[in-house]
Image (cartoon, rainbow, N blue to C red; front, side):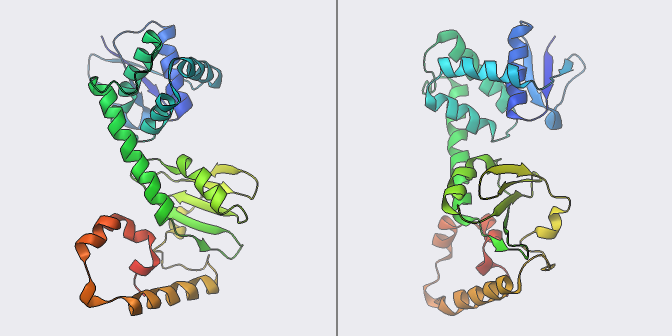
Length: 256
């Protein structure tokens, strides 16, 4: 009978689930986040209580068994939130702990090959967020940006934006996952807004943003329109560089 370990969706929760697998000596097991958990009539399930100490012990064991690349791949693939990624990662971790060699590039293993492909997908999304995030200044002096990435890449954006905008307070908010990262000039913390819809980039409610910000957006749109050479328009090439799903982040793509 298969046992399903249901965790809270956090990375520490996932590592705690792995601890429980070894602690309870489970063999036929699958790990699922609570919001995507499914089971059939013959399955049994139990809820994993996230434990930072257990998670730390597992990560320490992984650190000893895996290369730096292997550890990075585990974390980035986890952030993909793809169905079944937990079991794929558990396979990778189980092999690493058992064999005590770097298996990150053993692409003859279908599960490890999948991780490699997923990590590249997450990396591409991270780099596009680095490029396409657009801040707007609020009336209280914060710079605010909204995103809706395919993967949970906010944790991967911290280093880039903390370095690039070290002298400004900013928030990048993930509307799809309803949480954000906030930089207060000293550190970056996670936060949740009570009414995130009011801050959508395409919101008609501009009461949160300065008059200067709205004037600048209008000026930029007009500049972009005036410099556009219609006869040299190459939509196919443009879409290769800026896929349409990222247009919502760009001021020049929204109506004047």
